[in-house]
Length: 146
Image 1 (spheres, rainbow, N blue to C red):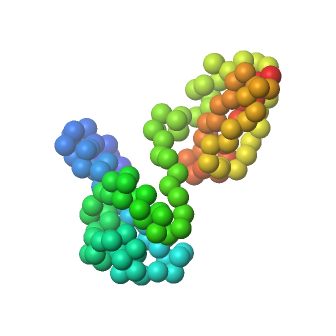
Image 2: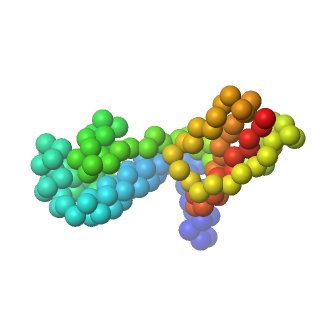
């Protein structure tokens, strides 16, 4: 049995799946905090001081031991002079082909590089939909219907 097979079997266990997903999210958030902190050139101690906590608390977040609240993440973002981009549910990661049956044939498709949600002029469009079509966020497909 290889790792993929083990993971598939293990994720059928609800308790394991919950812990796995919780760790996965905490780890990703920790990595984002590390990257942002390093880009700003500050230490864990300095970040802790800016958000009025202690360095071990920042270390626990960065190594994925703790999952921060959105309020605390917002404090970190503010301290790093940046902002949060709202997360999205996995359902929105579905490939465009799943939704093509709902898109009128008169739509034109435009590809863009990923950005925060782009609001197109809704007076000219009856239907705007952004769907991420790649796992690595390379492009977005935007059907624009007139």
